[in-house]
Image (cartoon, rainbow, N blue to C red; front, top):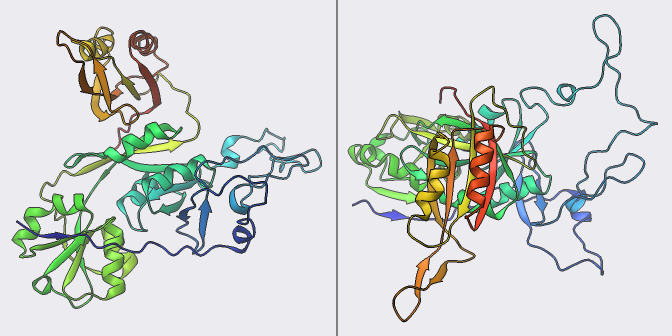
Length: 398
């Protein structure tokens, strides 16, 4: 069996801007300092430090945005003496300012967070979801969630499940911890490449590094190539970056072709995943939900918990089956706030059961009365119900 090591890669340096540094000193009356997180824009070498819980205040009078986190400011609102630009139609008449004027249909003004280094598959998914957005790499999944919550970015695109590796459990847990809404999904075909520095052949490689899932998805191919040693790291693009920066001659990386281009590596082999159909489903997160519709395919994601007892899960699923609502996924996760529950039965001592949350994807929109009635029915006996989002189904080619 192949051995595996786990070196810790350094992430992008956190160079603070002058304005951010000036705002970092709390006043005497401010609450205790919170843990700072790093979130770096791929188009700027500076890193933005954000607080884990604060939200920006309402804009001050006079059209000036209020001071945000660590010196960041919310966008100013128009006032009477600072009117928005005038627009005219082809006949020369004024027309109202629309959302499309402020943000193009492809998201030209959107900042979209993803986890990993530039060149990661998550960045490719963000570009597919919002083609002209400004991507913002984040060190951890939790950082991306908080970047949206704290108005540092507008959206986050994060993986939820893979056709080979299964569910990304960390992000299921974070969906419940944070108050963000799923506003869309995007599927991305993952095509792994074997990368190395210039002049290095496959025969020179004794080791390969990448994300654990990427290594698992290429296990047989790497063995056939004679590469036995594996090194697990946090990110595929981060592995490529490390190989390039250290000029390693006996170690390669499993990453995307974009990572090879960004970090100046050679592609020694393409499509090295053991199964050629390898698709990752990403969720698009925002602070506010979108308006659900019934004139196009929609999906709804919910999470709920139940009392212990025979037939409880069957009863929960029946509220959808009786209304002919298809379920496309069900995932159980431990209820971390209540990991164990006591239940009385015929024995003298109460029995301890593990408590679980159930994440379910419905092939329906919350604008559909059947979905509304099913969720109301579920709320009658479930101990907890939360709608994570109702959003368009991705029907495009991965």
